[in-house]
Length: 523
Image 1 (cartoon, rainbow, N blue to C red):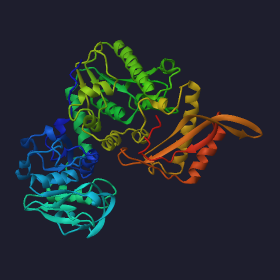
Image 2 (tube, rainbow, N blue to C red):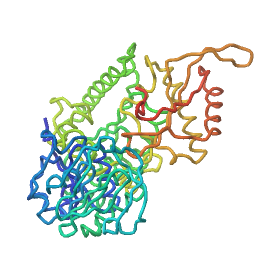
Image 3 (tube, one colour):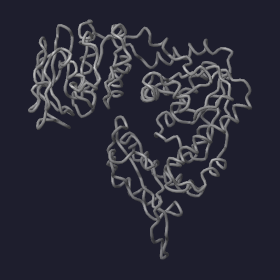
Image 4 (spheres, rainbow, N blue to C red):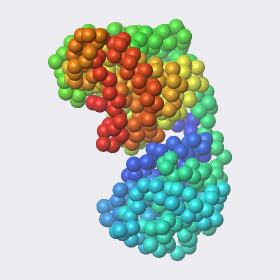
């Protein structure tokens, strides 16, 4: 197999000021890093047990994340208390706040009947961390333990009705802790608190700019990949599209994109992808129309996970067939992004991603290495890079779309007829949301062809058609999501058009389930 580390963009960030998000197992860790990057300060997430004290000294500041454990549990994640005395500013959040207190000899107690969860009124003291904030606001709490006595040298700088130490500070060592979560939108002044920590406490300048990243990357790959033959699996999704345009600007026709159209895309999507990359950008692109091949493999299959495995395996085979035709290829490009790096190996993710992005390419395809030009970017940064590269708005901001495509939005067996029906219904729904100017009101919206059929009436005739479910969610990070309160008028127009224009549909319903308990997708 190729060198799966490949070249990354570390050259672009070596000279940046950086904030370390030290991961202790919290659910909002990616969100913390994103919030810091929104301030134009580069943040990276590292597992608590993979970073030495010497490495910590390279950062402008450190944020201890939350976590599900109690600091008194021996199996809980801990760190060397010496980190508090190396001169690097630290902000502890939730578990990270308690851990800081524990390391500095403070007292942590079980909240018992005083545990807090959800929106909570918090009262701020006059402190650098809370500069510019009112004396009272709303924060998001989620804890069972609390700091009952701050460590020596620390003072309490915020409290709630139930939590006597909702925040603490040792200003001489630039150590701060908050029991609540400033990174979530429910904490009204959370963004300001993080901004104060980054700029007023850590003294950052804010030199992380996506424009610089794009320009530097193009110049770097122009030099590094000169004379090499490069292959990219183009799905038409945001990540692979941005990677493709970036590499094309760097090496031109030495890049070949293979677009596997498995017949499970949305209406006109395959043609749109081809026109964009072949005509607008003049890319060297191979489109493989493999709908019949995929549908024959999926015939009779109804179990969602089996659908996914079949599609992933067949993608490998199609990609392999095309790659063999091209002869010797030096480099494979993958659209790995930073959440992939974090979630699939805590920094050692490239090996895992070689099995994830392109399905686990077999050894028979010979690549010298894998290049991952976007592996330092979050999704919102990838979109901004796409805009910087001149990719059409409708592609850069396209709706999130599962790898198996419409296969997991057709409940039950997949047929060509069902796919066409769903494409038409989905296109109408998305068109009505766009016509109402509500595209930014919801983070993802789509139609599902349920396996339910029901009686209907068309004119004087009885019908027995499919039920289409419409789904729209609002979310900050897709870990949790609220169903979107789309106006009734929009839903009414979508329903009327779908039942009148899409033959075979007799009923339309709207999914009002949040995540949890549901997932965003139905399968």
